[in-house]
Image (tube, rainbow, N blue to C red; front, side, top):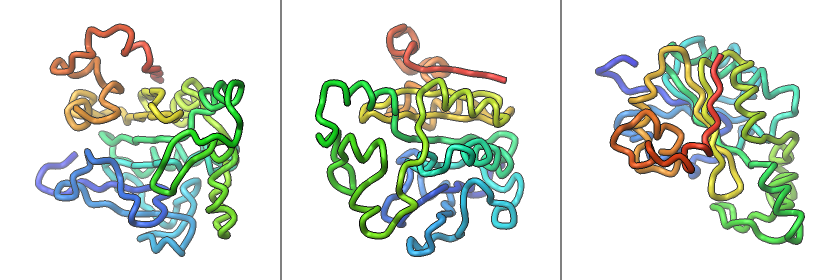
Length: 230
């Protein structure tokens, strides 16, 4: 990434501006550009993340933030979306993805009522049912694109990322039945990313790259991270 300029961050499937991105993306250092399929969210760019040609140029972003969006794609659109992320990134860029962990949700459905609340989000209570099929109140309000059309496990998300051409994919199970992934371009600096996300909820993704993190020698914690490379 070049010094002396604001780094460009694509908020892919941004939804309304109130959602924001990850706290690690300091607005004084990162210029956020929002893209969403729904023009009612007033994004900077309108379009599907599975085909951004004509909307986003090649090699034009330093990072992509994609929070709870990939599960809204049809299954056949996921790989094209990941390839689009790779296309628009610089050689040292990276992607941070979060999405529901369908394996964790499925295990909970075995022991809990499917309408029980899994956690509380900015949108309100999220039931197991919502995590499988999409946020019901949003869909009822006419936001039909909020339906969930596919699902991800740690292994599947990592495998798709590598198949899309990323040099490395790191995937971690989160605290709210979710997944977190870091997808890295060939020249991405994993040590710099470890520093960027240090003391955040996804620091464990890079714990083996940062000597300052006590998790480096914590075999139990490191085992949670699935690392795949091309």
